Length: 173
Length: 59
Image (cartoon, rainbow over all chains, first blue to last red; front, side, top):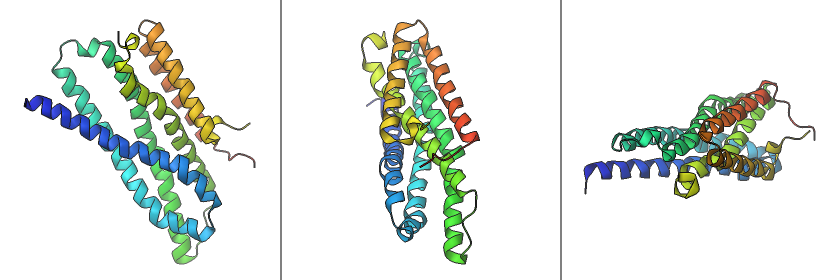
């Protein structure tokens, strides 16, 4: 097998495997956790915030970064081997999806994770030292929620432009 | 007024509508992908507008 083809295939595999992890956890947060947490007893919610949430956020944010880096490497490597690719419709469609993916990554690392980390730290402080919940905690939760919902909304067109659009006849003209 | 993003169904509908709009833009208008990217950036800017004053919804 051509090593270039193997390289491209490996990058595509990594991009999709990390992307499934990222978006899978994003959907878990939005479709499962956001619905369940308000219905849980306070002690159970605290326990989940201390144990489950940090682990889920660890995989979430690093999968987002790996998805992005593998995607950029794939796009550059794929285009380098195909003259005219960067002026093609296929590339432009991927670029629209890539812009959404990039925005989603910035939301993860710039808004969702910092605010969730504050919430986790505050919960730990409450449990260990009995400190009162900070007055800004609802604001942190709201910011993380809005950015996470924006990412969920953008994930649908992002997946369309990344996965479906290049294979649709008229769109790929 | 409740935002579409407050509910799961509203979020999914918003995503589907944006998908259709962007697909139309890139398919119908020459170089429509430029406009599509501008629309995406405007949506992102709108999110920051919400973050500036993140008022929780009245229950």
